[in-house]
Amino acid sequence: MAKTFEETDVWKESRELVKLVYKMTSGLQFKKDRVLLDQVRRASVSILSNIAEGFERGSNTELTHFLYIAKGSAGELRAQMYVAVDQGYISQADRLKVHERCMSISCQIAGLIKYLKRSGLKGSKFSGQEGR
Image 1 (tube, rainbow, N blue to C red):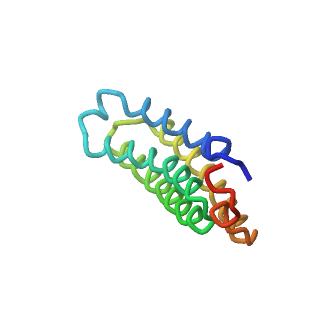
Image 2: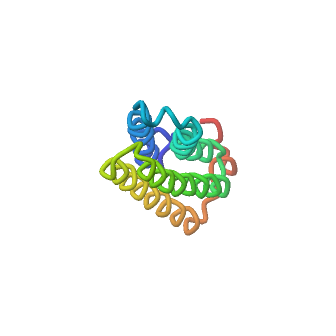
Image 3: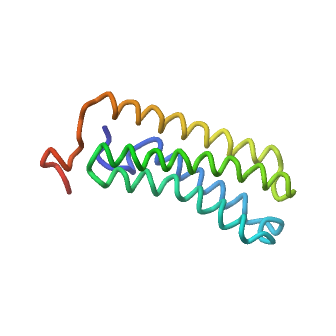
């Protein structure tokens, strides 16, 4: 297991997704819809933020909880991309780019959750390694 969330592939990929979403939503069309713009950006940021927060909690139970939230945010972002296409803010090709990244991240999160549940490990909070 990685020592910091920044070392994890899923967090790195989530960071790249945020960059993509911000770039994709910076166009004039998207800026007309401030509500959707804000929601899309917040959902993308929520993915990497929840991975980080869960990791820093030092408990595998809490990490699992926050990973489920991050996974939910990935689904939320996928749904919002359909709205963006339907409103003509982005192309179907752009939606697919986000969709593929979200699916990859969701799969990685699911695998990590599965590992944590099977491992029996409790986390650094319970092993005297917290804060290191």
